[in-house]
Image 1 (cartoon, rainbow, N blue to C red):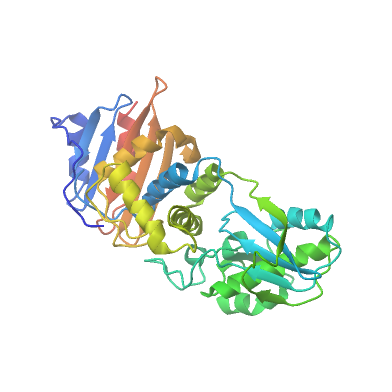
Image 2: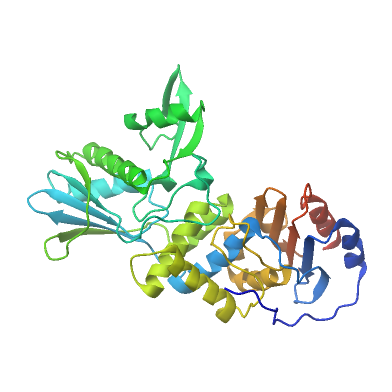
Length: 389
């Protein structure tokens, strides 16, 4: 994606009271744009300067996913019988496959199967390695690796009780083999991700499935292995569809600024548009074409879908256009008082974008981007809250 000149019209608006109040708060690496409920631009400062958006870029990814996958789209997970009693599980990237879903799946399968021999895991719908620009290799949840068959966002939530580690979630067991990773984290409680190895996350999913199968009276007799599904020899016995539609995945993505969900959606879009296996390159092709062709935005650079990369560049005016298109889905965003918003934070980067309820029932739209060291969006937002009634 090549950065070129912005083509959206930039109306010439005389400096007004709000703009005069904003300018002293902003440096050359900061930008603000605000519109009235009727779309009139109330203030625009450095609105056409490409800046690092951080996690407000997730609004673009969310909008593209809703348009390309569909608001009611539900991720599948398939279960195949192989041979006498082996069970193959094939994942398609469900970002909201959680412990409580595994328990329900196990009860469903226990009604048609009596036992499981080997448990075979197939995550070939995604191609590996998955290299997300900007993603680190830490055990922090924001660095969770992606995969086609993942459970609990590829994370483990734990705490200490009476000197021993236990699960911090009543619905999720703490698998013994994870204790070495938990101890290595140096934390007494918290959430950590799997090691930066998709097979480790795949094993975690398999161990959790085996646990819930046993709980449902469906013992797993054989080993957990990794292999592809073979349509000519495997028989589909159950096709699980996510209990939550795409819009709920987007709501979780925006509420918790979940990088894992953002990039699962990016990969899923790529596979739908350009075929399996899913790759970052295919997903980026979809996202960039949506940005340029569907939204008509020409300035900037999209490096990935979560906002982790500092190579991402978006103007405040482009973000405003994204928000305008996202407006029918505004209730998927976090709410605080009059604000419906998404924030973004990297070192020396603080951004906020969203809507501000007006007294007449309409909504102001705002984008605040600060790329200056030591600056936050707080002062600007206090001004906007005070002035935009």
